[in-house]
Length: 370
Image 1: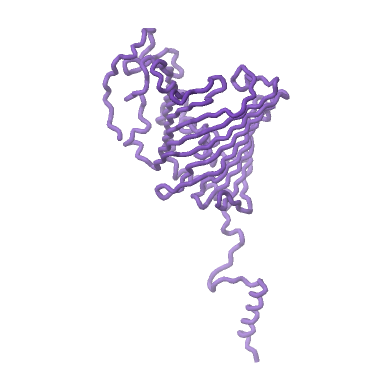
Image 2 (image 1 turned 90 degrees about the vertical axis):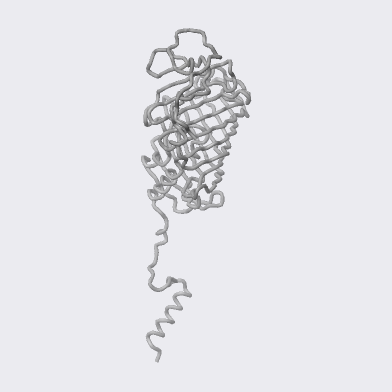
C-alpha cells in the first residue's frame, strides 16, 4: 500500500513539473508579483533623498549650446525681446560656471561667450560676459560686467529676492535638470503638488540601467522622470511639456529632454556629471508661428561634495574683500532711489565725481578663509 506521504511527494513533483506549485524554501512565504515594486510616492521619496544627499557642493562645469530660430515672416519679434525678424540656425554659445550651494545659500560665477544674445553679436572668449551672484540666506548680490575689460566698469544689484527665491533662482540655466530643478523649483516638490502622479508597471532601460518611470500631470503640463535605482535614484532621463504663453497658455509650449546622463561615484554617493539637454519652444500668437530649438551638452569638470562652506567663506558678503569691482562700478539697491557707486573700496552715494581708476583700495579686516 502506498502511504499518504509517498502520494503527497508524487503530487508535489507533478505540480512542480506543471509549473503550478511555488518553488521556495521551507519556512518562507510567497510574494506578490508587484511586492518589490514601490508605489509612486515611495519612489518620489527616494528621489527626494537622492537630491538632499547631494545638495551641498562646489561644482565647476562647462556647457556648449547650439540654437536654431525659425519664425514666420510676419511674426512680431518683440515677443523675443528683439526688433528684427529672426531666422537663424547654428548659433553657438559657450558657458563656464562655478556653482556653489548648501541647499539654502547659493553662489554662481559665470562666463559666457559666442552668441550670447540675439542683439549682442558674437562675444570674444578673451572678454566674455561675466556674472557673479551670491545669496547668503538674507541678501542678494549680483555683479554683471565684461571680464578682462578694465575700461568698462560693470553694474551691481543688491536685493530683489526673497527667501523663497534666493536659493533657487540660479537654476534656470542648462544644468537645471541635472540639479533636479524645473525653472526655479525642485522637480520632486512639483510632483508632490501634481494633479495626478503614476508609476509605470514596467521598468525601462536607459543607458544600461533599468529605471522606474514616474509620470505626473501638473497645472501647466506633464513631467516624466526615469528614476535610476542603480545610481542612487537620481534621474537618468527627464521629459517635460509645459504651456507658458500669455495671454493664453497655449501660445507658448516648452518641451525639454534630459538624456545621456553619466554618473560618477563621489564619497560613496552617485552624482550626475555629464548630460545632454534638448529644448524646443514653439510660439503661436495670433496665428503667427515660430520655434526655438536648443541642444546643450553639460559637463562637470570638478565636483566637491559636502564642503565646509563656513571655513571656505562660500557665501560671505562679496563687498568685504572684493577684488573684482572696478572703480566706478555702478551699484543699484532695489527699493532705494539713491544712485550709488563703488569708490575707494566701498559703496558710496554717486555725487557725479569723476572716478579714479587707479585709486588705492583701503585694506579691510576680514576673517581668513581657506
